[in-house]
Length: 284
Length: 244
Image 1: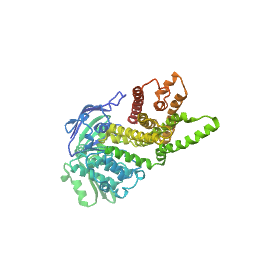
Image 2 (image 1 turned 90 degrees about the horizontal axis):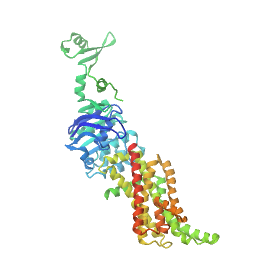
Image 3 (image 1 turned 180 degrees about the horizontal axis):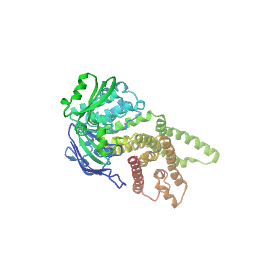
């Protein structure tokens, strides 16, 4: 769906590239996560992909066509939710959705049905100026999907949401993937990336240092062991055991037999651990 | 056309929900009422106290008031653009089928069309006081219409908020000084006033310092000045948007 090779970008007046020759591809129906700290070049890359920035080096092909040659028809196929919601504050939620839907030639989803998807159905007539940040984020996301786009660009979509609404939004994103939509997710929230993304790319200082699925990364980079917490003589203790010969590990078997086990966890790394290990930077 | 209508309805919604913008938007219509009252009262008073009949100055006075129409319309749209700039709406339009270019076209079209219509109504409503001929009416209304986006984009470029926007609006109001000066000064230096678009409107109505040009030259030169200033204003605005 999207093939990027040797992508470079330099802001006018700057003497250094912000994006330094990156390569990646995103398949149809894939959720691709772009992870990196602030200033890493992930927002710049997204801005290039949604044609806000032009004059890039290298190649970006969308369904086989060079991005720079695509006309405004491209915008009928993409949906964008920016990190900071940009909505008309003097309009109600329904008025916002109705107005923006008039910009598309495709038939858009009924605003009321959209609002119901993220629990805003009772607030459709409320002015956006009276919305909380979380409500604006939800409306911002709904606007991005209202015209049923083929590619979704989501920048920190769950930022500022309470857990219940973040859950609903993640379910919608998964549903969109199920419908065959391609989703490009920019985030520094590794939990969201870990849960949603089929593959993630780590970007630091304009370069991609690694691309793989979160599961593969966790297995490859993690420690193949289990950590057991158990109570012995009224004291909480913990021990770890390698997975390779765990069925023959006498000490592990003994602990299981005592029935004093409190927790057992595999010791795979978190995405954040892997990010720090790979790039030497934190996801801030 | 459908999109233009949607934009116009959205603009009206924005305007009626903000008292300051509502007041500014209805100002051109108030001007029509005020000028009728002003001219009848002022004429009598000036005759009584100065023994001078201002009837010969009616074209200058009327053209002066007409210059306020694009200013008011331009400021109202300027307030909307200011809000849109602050909310990063322009970046959002850039990723819709409308595109950033389409947004700019709409933002120019709405004040141009509205100012043209109000200007025609303005001159026709004063027809019994000052009978402007049809060709002049069309030229002057077109030039006035082109002045509205100048105010919109200049205000949206240089103001950080609505209070600053109002202050800049007042500053831009100084653009009506050159046409008045041109009316009273008879000097070759007065040609310098024609760099300011407003001077053309006033001069076409009053005929001051413009008699040596024929109509096609007047139309070409005035259009050139107006379009050049609009291009400057849009470029200034885009720099501000792209840099923010």
